[in-house]
Structures are given as C-alpha cells and as structure tokens.
Amino acid sequence: MKPAAFEYHAPESVDDAVGLLSGHEDAKVLAGGQSLVPMMSFRLARPAGIVDINGISDLDYIRCEDGVVRIGATARQSALEESGEVTGCAPLLAEATGHVGHRAIRNRGTLAGSLAHNDPASEYPAVLMALGASVTAVSSGGSRVLSVEDLAGGHFLSTALGSDELITEVSVPAQSGGHGFAEFSRRHGDFAVAGVAAVVSMNGSGVESASIAAFGGTSPARLDEAETALVGSDGGSSAVAEAAARAASQFPATDDIHGSADYRRALIDVLTRQALQQAIAGAQEV
Ligand SMILES: Cc1cc2nc3c(=O)[nH]c(=O)nc-3n(C[C@H](O)[C@H](O)[C@H](O)COP(=O)(O)OP(=O)(O)OC[C@H]3O[C@@H](n4cnc5c(N)ncnc54)[C@H](O)[C@@H]3O)c2cc1C
Image 1 (cartoon, rainbow, N blue to C red):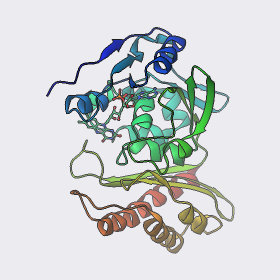
Image 2 (spheres, helix red, strand yellow; image 1 turned 120 degrees about the vertical axis):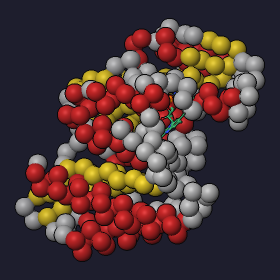
Image 3 (cartoon, rainbow, N blue to C red; image 1 turned 90 degrees about the horizontal axis):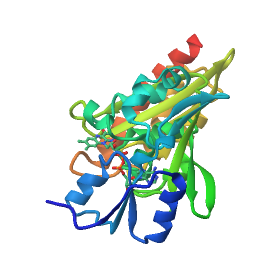
Image 4 (tube, protein in one colour; image 1 turned 30 degrees about the vertical axis):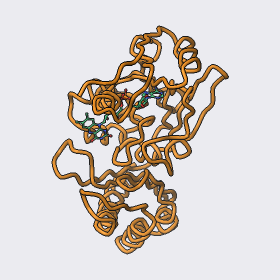
C-alpha cells in the first residue's frame, strides 16, 4: 500500500526542525525511516507532516568526550559498529548492534530513531538502560535530558517524549566492567523473541555492581531484583542462577504469536545466565 498524503519538510537546523514540530500538531520526525516508512505504507501511521532530519548535518556524529560516548540523532546504526569510540568505550553497544536487523537496515536506521520508536523487541532500549544512557530532547521551549529508563521503560511502542520533541543526542557513559549480551531470535536478523543485556563490575570480594535489562516483553525493563541478588555475591553459579530466576519472575512477559509469556520467562532465565556468565568473565579480566 502507499502512505496517505502528507506534507514533507526538510529543515537544515535543529531550530527549524523543532519549529516545524511545534507548528504541526500531527507531524512525525523521519530519521532512517526503517520503522516509520513501513508503518506509513501499511497505514498504521498517518502523519499529516514529515520532518526529515537527514539534512541536519550537525546531528551526524559519534564522539567520546570526558568518559561519555555522544551519538548524534542521524548517526547510522552501522556507524556504531565501525566506530572506535563505541567499540572502545561501550563495547556492549557495538556487540548488540550486530543483532539489529540486517546490514542494509543498519545502514539507514539510527540509534535515536530506535529509542523514539521503542519497539519492545528492540535491542537498543534495554542495552542503553543497562549502560545507564540518557537522551537530550529539544523542543521550541528548550531542552531536557531524560534517562533511557525514563524515556522508554513501561512504554509500548511509545515513549515519554512529547510530540514536539526531537532527540538530538544519545549519551552513553563509558562502560565500566564486563558486559554480556544474549538474545533468542528464530533467524539471524529477525526481531528477538527475548534478550538480556548486562554490565557487571567485580572487586576483590565479588560482584561490586550489576546492571541488567531485558527486552521482548511488554516494554524494555531494568531487572533490579536480579541486580540485588547478584551484588555482594561471589558471582559463582548459584548466585547467577538466583539472579536469573529473579530476572525471569520480574520480566514483564507477554503472549503473542512468537511465544507464550511462560516461554518468554523460561528464555529470560536462560539468557540471563548466559549474559551474566559472559559479563562476569569479562569483569574478571578488567
Ligand atoms: C526488516 C526489518 C528488521 C528490523 N529488525 C530490527 C531488529 O532486529 N532490532 C531492532 O532494534 N530494530 C529492527 N528494525 C528497526 C530498525 O532498527 C529501525 O531503524 C529503528 O527502529 C528506527 O530507527 P529509524 O532511524 O529508522 O527511525 P524512523 O523509522 O525514521 O522513525 C521511527 C520513529 O521514531 C521517531 N523518531 C526518529 N528519530 C527521532 C528523533 N531523533 N527524535 C524524535 N523522534 C524520532 C519517528 O518519528 C518515528 O515515530 C528492523 C527494521 C526492519 C525494516
């Protein structure tokens, strides 16, 4: 099907983009178009206006400054895989990016667009929760910084963003500790049925800190009960098993054509063990 008719705008600055968003009640930002365009083609989305941000060259950057990786809104997902800043400062983000769709999709899709879309099966919102990342959202009224947890947590295919707000930057604190990532999808490149991302740091007596988040449920979720079970433990197999059991019970599982809620909880148990074993092994090498 073809999209319904819409007005097309191609601003060349953030000021012009947010001016257009505030002036058009039913306008949508177009970034990589990898989620918005299919939704428009199926007429699941019928925005009256499109604000195409691809011409705002100031937003196409990835840099690591003062221990923070800063990623502009039009930086492509494929650029994250190739960036020394990302592989060096946030290797969990680089590893997870390889699981997002296929290369052709990552050549157009953006990290900010994925966060704004917030598909519950998407890797990025949960990965960025585990990394403690935040976004800068700009509107004609000013700007604010939201943690990814506040932006995406508890939301289904929506976020805490206002319709007049543009994400201009995603900020990711440099990862401290080892990371783990595990997901299950039926074929490589498909959206995952469920997945887990974790960052763990160790000291001489065991696990010092743990940050665990999961995707594939009703919304991306930070699993703080699993974190509590792990922190202060020796990081051995029984502590990992206890954390995984708590992750499975806290995970907001859902039934759909890809699997039942019980099946997803069982997956989260297994995937949490795998992610934590990888993260703990990595933390022991740091
Ligand atoms: C076949 C296929 C397979 C895929 N597989 C996966 C997968 O396995 N995992 C995965 O995570 N994703 C997957 N995707 C989705 C892909 O990662 C998208 O690129 C991503 O979800 C959206 O990013 P985008 O830049 O294309 O955003 P767009 O499609 O341009 O926009 C998506 C939404 O976000 C809004 N938006 C975009 N940028 C901003 C911004 N800066 N500020 C405010 N709002 C904004 C738009 O208005 C729109 O509502 C797949 C897509 C396809 C087509």
